[in-house]
Image (cartoon, helix red, strand yellow):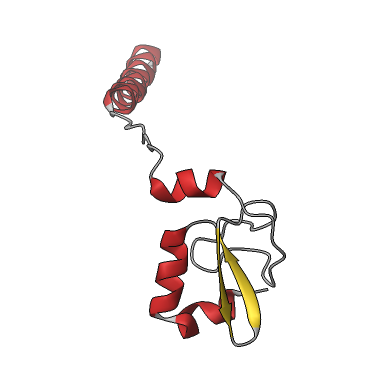
Length: 104
């Protein structure tokens, strides 16, 4: 009787160990891709900032903080809005009503 009990425990242990090993092997074989971002024109322009006072704290298009990172501006409805790049300004000009709610 004890032999049957020991054999049953050994089988369950072997199955459990097998499942853990299978999970470990599958997890280790997953390839994790690393995203590499190269600097594009928007990032390069953001590095060159203008010394101007703007009415917004973040770029309404990409969300980047404008404090010290304004490389282009536009006057719209009596306010001066700053953008991190000309690309973001151009996106804003296409549809200002889409981005105005994002202004703070």
